[in-house]
View 1: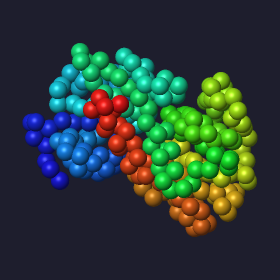
View 2: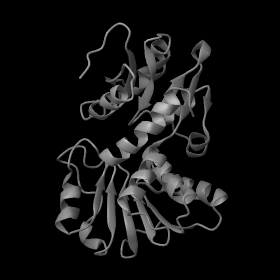
View 3: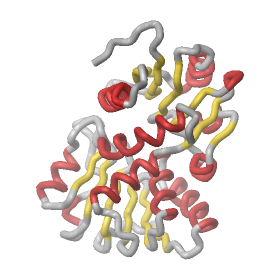
Length: 263
């Protein structure tokens, strides 16, 4: 892999904590394969230092942009001077580019990356019930993408009800034909999505019991850092599994075009 020089540019991925972040192993080779002398660098930034850090780094011509992961996506939305349509609806940003005068423009590509990966794997059927666990930044983006792609039935589950209820109201205001439920049922699921952080640590509980899923249900776990116990349990049941690496790979071209000002 090409080492950075003074002429290289950098995309910083902000997280807290950041020990699990493995995205550079996907992003940097993609950049180089597309003729860009760019490198992704993880930064562990506590929320109270997020605004000042990103504003300071944005002043350097060596910085090509920013990638945001937990817990910074809502704060990134508030920080940006302008946002794209997906971010505007979802209230979160996972990608920021720097424009003239240090203007920060954000967009959310989690939903697009998820949907493209699900379609490639052949696991998105708009006529089957989609169950999304988690109504945080990634969950909002995924629910929005499913609704925009024509999903007819959606179930949103969250540890605390308020975020799921708020997201439901927002989705219903735009997608009037979408049936949304908040009851914890899995027997009609055609696609189950873990959009939580559960699985980043070996000690995490499972987001749900895979034994409750139908035999023909597909599972998409957005965790990319490791093969989680939930993934293993679903695979042991014979369920079709897609992990977060697929979501990253399908976000890469979308985000890179955005950082380059091509979208």
